[in-house]
Image (cartoon, each protein chain N blue to C red):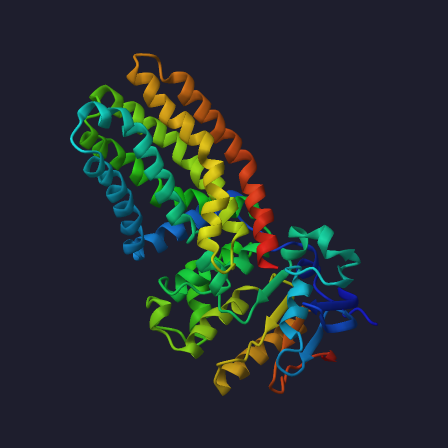
Length: 204
Length: 241
């Protein structure tokens, strides 16, 4: 269970947000909305433990994530708004490495299946440099297809640059993950239609 | 709030498979692969080393005794500079494209991942200097018996440069004018390696044993290999915040 208490973040002397509290149970979806520059990405980075909030605490199963560190990250899949892809590597190599760093060793077949599911079949061997923006986003999001084991998905603008079919695919994968008892946190400007037992909305 | 029923396997087992050292291997493999696909970056560092070393004979003039005397210092200083040149790139690309965030959020200890990155960095920018250094030493008419000592001192010394330099690279990550700051931060820390490394050659040239110097370098390497990865990891967490 992911829990946040009175989170506050500042940029310079400006307060981005304060008093953000929520409690996300297994199967729950947290949608973070808000205009540009309101701190959506900052909130997500604080939830990951990449950034120390100015005030407040994030807890995973009752324990502060600052103390859990690697133990917490073993349960976490974070997809930032940057794609974390290497231009000189192929989608296949990128996905295999990203999973390995994330703590899972994935077989070649699963990598191929994941990329094919995201519509990159036949392009596994092209350098990422040769892909379009949307295809790059898909290559990044293909991690969702090999990350069932990560309980908590934190996705920053997962739908950016995706076409309708891509958005539908990510929404259905998030739905499946919630049905398995996972948790999903996402920021979006679009209306995220994810089938979820419980939904928490935070508008920054 | 209600706790939805979940499968125990999903909630209780961390998704970890394979040893942590397989991650180390994967990091080295990836960075070597990236270096291989961007060979021009490697060539610039090597050419820089070759050119800096070659400038001295031109500047000093054809005086064999003088050249022989300055050879160890020149080659070692050039090695420091080219090592530093390559350092600026160590984490910059991963920082810019978001791959670094993924490393920071890895269940594998960050120190291990960082050790892999530094190892790959040394293999691509330090090891070539070890091979090329003795060849360049011929321009200085360095005694042939000293070439082995030179190669050995570079072999033990350049990994220390990579390890110490990586702390600076991590601290200056994302800063404007980080390159110059990196030089100011790191070059003073290189002084012990420079003194001991060049000292090994001076000792051997004077007919003494180079072993004490080489052992000192090796001790520095062991210390650096044990402690710097954690310092680099801590610096990265600060820089990436």
